[in-house]
Figure 1 (cartoon, rainbow, N blue to C red):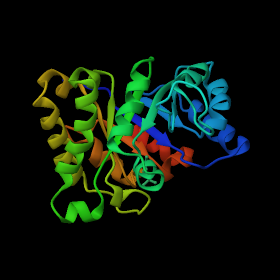
Figure 2: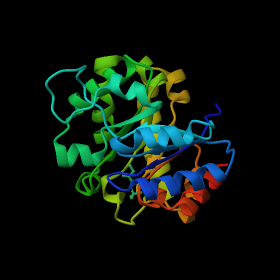
Figure 3: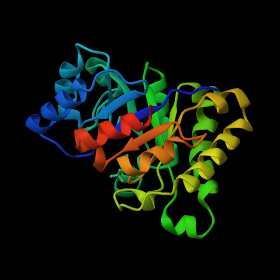
Figure 4: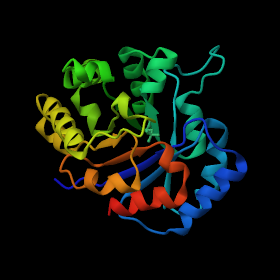
Length: 250
Ligand SMILES: O=C(CO)COP(=O)(O)O
């Protein structure tokens, strides 16, 4: 099965009007790519990026988070329907920084995915183990537990509309990327787990790798049969580096 590659930049809590305008302008200059190119600014910059990208279809927009609630007295939260006003296609959910720093549980992440699927968004569902869990041989068990929460709430067909991002926590922002073989092993395990519910869905679902992806490591990652792209943090803030990753994806 041919799955289109996705190269997504998670800008996290970085950028300003000036730096984001310059970055997006450089990305748009690069022209067409066979991969889906996605950027994920903080909420206050969604409108700016949406406006900058409006004239072309080259760069898709992602939000970094969403509330599981529809509307109401939830100070500081942003709902899925609000995101509809900004041309957002993808929304990150379950990023390890949200899980570890803001206490997001597997169940809450599943509810957030539900609120996105009730609209027309594609969740980028982040999963992955800590170093401690990897050393205890629990890598796949942790990924399966995180996926199971979504399977239990929404069923396997939901994964026809979800992109998975495998991001080992120990590789995020550390410069310690998983090797392409390590990542492939987990991606293959994730696909096999979904195949237990539906082989067709498992073959279709795009699984991105995230964690210290750089231009220099991306080609080997993308050569792996179960790695369908990357969710890039730090390196996505540099247009030249990010575009090299996009190029490596073909
Ligand atoms: O968290 C990440 C993407 O969501 C990865 O971040 P880094 O690429 O900076 O390690």
